[in-house]
Amino acid sequence: MVTTVKFVAQNTYFEQQKPLWNTIAIVYTFLGYIGGITLLIIPTIWLNLFGVVLLTHSLVFSAYLSHEFMHSTIFKQRRWNVIFGTAMLWLNGGCYYGFQALTLQHIAHHLDRVDVFIFDIIAAIQKLPRLVRLGILVLEWLYFPILAFWMRWRYITSPWWNLEHRQERSRMILILAIRGTLFILLGLFAFKALLLYSFSYIGMITVLRWMDTFQHTYEAFPPGATLPKRDHNYEQANTFSNLLSRRYFWLNLLLLNFGYHNTHHAVMTCPWHSLHQLDQELFHHHEKHYIPLLTQLINYHRFRITRLLTGMGQVVDENDSLNLEHFYGAIEVSFLTLY
Image 1 (cartoon, rainbow, N blue to C red):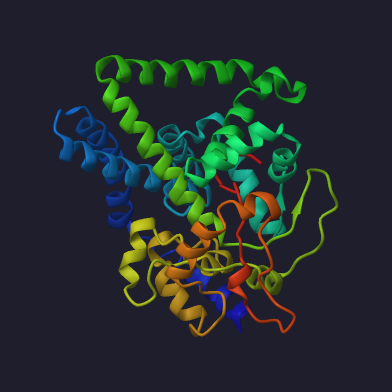
Image 2 (cartoon, rainbow, N blue to C red; image 1 turned 45 degrees about the horizontal axis):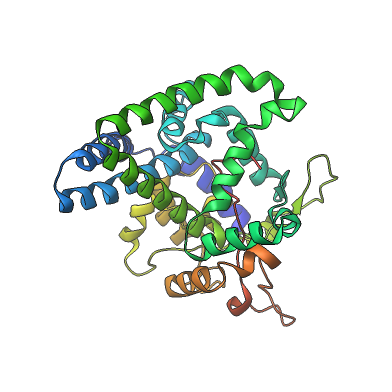
């Protein structure tokens, strides 16, 4: 039944573009980014606080719009999706990896129905000196995403210690020079704004982490490993939808409907603005893959250290029932970084 609907949906929803909705989202992202930084500079505390919120939200939008451009759901011509997707990555810091590389990795995630990792975070944490490991765990307990920055800087510096990435040195130096110069200029003009910008960026990482944490229980494999054949049933059984609200569906627009993750994986060409409608068509809403918002927040907070040491936990019990009590969640599986 789902397969039949999926086929119909791919020919229906992909053609039902809403240019006005896309334009509003894109314009809001750029204006929110510029306006947010402007508000950080103004010497008024309440405007500064509003600027942090606005900038954080625009960065989150830039991330989820990057995701849409990866799937070519905004423009019919691939060229324009690449151009705007690259622009969004320059806002949120994904530019270090490159739009094409991130797209190939993410689409493979859909097609292979597995996760691939190069850097095993859990193993790496265990190998660290005791005091360093303790420092990382304390920072993560305090909600400072030190592991996210570790992964980013590990890749940024990889052209100098990984021979396979040596050809990336010139590109990485250019990006670092451009972004570094812009941040230095902002700091010289208003150091307070630079500090507040860091709060917004950490806020973006935290929101993306929270959304990514409970969306999959896929198996993870190192590059080059023989991947098992996984079908649509496996994909749906190991995918979860973490909506902000099932009753007030418009609230999910705050995150560009990214919480409709089972629907997105059922029809990955469906644009963000039509995911709610497609979700209504595909599912009866008594499926076990919907995770309530309160459960998401409790588990994200409660297991923020546990998942770093033991992995995502056990989600389905011996009776094939969903057991969210032991769903610790995944770590650092963002579509904005290369694994």
